[in-house]
Structure formats: C-alpha cells, structure tokens
Amino acid sequence: MTMDHEQAFVTLATNDSYAKGAMVLGKSLRNHKTSKKLVVLIGPHVSDQSSSVLHKIYDEVKLVDVMDSGDTAHLAMMKRPDLGVTFTKLHCWTLTHYSKCVFMDADTLVLSNIDELFDREELSAAPDPGWPDCFNSGVFVFRPSNETYGKLLQYCTVHGSFDGGDQGVLNGFFCDWSTTDITKHLPFIYNMSSIAIYTYLPAFKQYGANAKVVHFLGQRKPWSYTYDPKQRRVRGEIQDATPHPSFLVDWWILYSSEVVPLLLRAYGDLPFHSGCEEGVAQHALSSMTSEERKQKWEQGQADYMGMDSFDNIQKKLDVFLK
Ligand code: UDP
Ligand code: GLC
Ligand code: MN
Image (cartoon, rainbow, N blue to C red; front, side, top):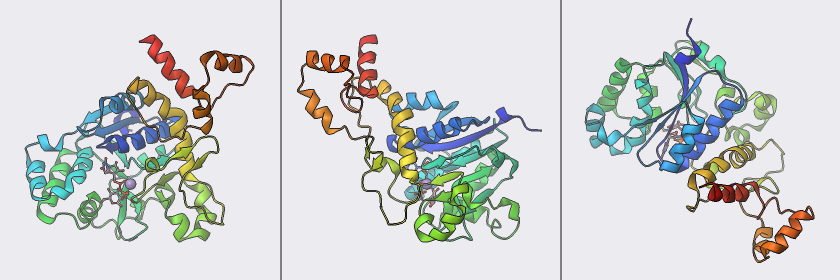
C-alpha cells in the first residue's frame, strides 16, 4: 500500500505568467480536497513575489535551473536550445522522494477530485486531440526514478524531439503507449482540451459535463486575456451561438477571487497588473475626496468593484500593517 504522502501532483512554471496558471491549478486541486502533496518546479526567472505565493499554495516549490546543471542535460541543451522547457519538465522524474506522481501542465484546471489517477501506472495519459495515437503530455502519471530520468536525457541527446517539446520526447520514449495496455489510456475527461468544444461539439454536449480536467492547450492562455469581474466576462473570448459552460470564466473566477488577493499582498506597493479590469466607476470615484467617499460608504454605497474593492482594501491594510 502506498501512502498519500508518497504521492504528489507536479507542475512546472518557468516564468511569472505560467506561475499564475500554476497558482490556479494548485488552488483547484486544494478546493477539490486532494489528499496528495502538491509540487511546483520553478525556473530562475520566476519572481520572488510569485514564488512566495506558490509557497502558500504548494507543499514543495523546487527551483530547477537547467543552465546550472552542467551534466548531460546541459550538454544536450547546448545542442538543442529549443528543448529548454522540455528539459525542465523532464526534471519531474528526479522527485524520487515520491513513489508515484501525476504531472499537470500549468494551463490545466481541475473541476473535481482526481486522486483516483494514482491507481494508474506509468506512463498513463490521455490521447492528444491533434493526433490521437500520441498521448498529450499535459497530464500524465509517472514514477520518479533517476534511472528513467537518465534514459530520457539519453533519448533526447540521440533522437531529439519530433515536436521540439517534451511531448515528442515522451511519445518517442514510451512508444508502445497507443498499442500495448489500454489501462494506460486515460479517459479524455482527465485532459479535455478546450479546443474539443469547437472541433466536436456534439461529443462535448454528450460527455462534457463529466470533464474533470480542462486543458487550455494552444497559444492563447487564460492569463493572456483580460477579465471584467462585474459582468463575469472574459474579453475577447470566442462567443458563438451555442451556449456552453465557459471554462475560461471558471479559471478567471478562481484566479480573481483566490489568487489575485495573494499576489496583491505579495507585491505590496510594487506595481502589479492582475488582468482584471477596474470598473469605470473607479476612475469616477478617484476624483472624489476621501470625505465624500466615507459618506457614501456610510450610506451603504460602497464601490465594491472599484475603489472599495477587496483588493484595494487589502492593499491599504497591508500598507498600514508594514
Ligand atoms: N511551460 C513553462 N514556461 C514556458 C512554456 C511552458 O513553464 O515558457 C510549462 C508549463 O507548465 C506549461 C507546459 O510547460 O503548461 C507546456 O506548455 P504549454 O502548456 O504552453 O503547451 P501546450 O499545452 O499549449 O501545447
Ligand atoms: C503539447 C502539450 C504540452 C507539451 C507541448 C510540447 O501540446 O500539451 O504539454 O509541453 O506539446 O511538447
Ligand atoms: Mn498545456
């Protein structure tokens, strides 16, 4: 019997943008009451502020500096600098103080408890929507092992990656995934790319309600949009005639309510852009004297979305407490 503390969800963030994704992912795993440890691998370009917030959400924040490794990884990197992120992801195999792990991309969001994934074996993953004989490496079950890590690096040096990323390497290395053992095929609901909504809408209507993990695969990530908290709308989201649940809005609700307050606290007086639009009311109110504002507040007319929003109040409190 393996113990829960020997098992972990693992993600990766090499910069502050992906760190936002990792924060939302971590929160979503906690909110759905995972009993597993949470680990985030970070690169040296992640700011101290982001790192401090990650420490609040994750059990373990591990700095992985690829350029410092000076070993096989480093050499292979030199030959193929395009594989930078790949090497960082493969680092998850070195987490040998865990017996089994589930890797999740920082652009995934958990919609219900998925601890049952730990019943699966290495290497379990869901089909890639673009080429279903390949698995998508945004969610996979693996067993940390220095031996496997070494073999993976060796594989990279010899064969490289057919897609320039980790998914090419992993599909090359675990090449019997599509033919050998069906229990290693995770159902699509554990890595449902939001693209599937548009490419196969009837299937999404039939099965989408069962989705447990949504993956914002592709160039445009949730954090590259802006959000209007008043209307609960994501600016620039593709709107079509068929109404379907917006996972993008789900991501933003979690980010704006549970992650932004932590980030504002971490940044203190330093500028930080949450991506949440500040209501027009804020600009109107900013010309108001504090006495006028106080009166409005006392009359029960607080501007909850603007000047008197939780974020602004939190910021003020933090300045006073410092
Ligand atoms: N990643 C990262 N920094 C980067 C690019 C990627 O930390 O600059 C990590 C992050 O965990 C991300 C994963 O690598 O989720 C895979 O990249 P991405 O999700 O952008 O690929 P996609 O799923 O869109 O193909
Ligand atoms: C894929 C996966 C992602 C991987 C990338 C590079 O589309 O979604 O996890 O990092 O390709 O191989
Ligand atoms: Mn991804």
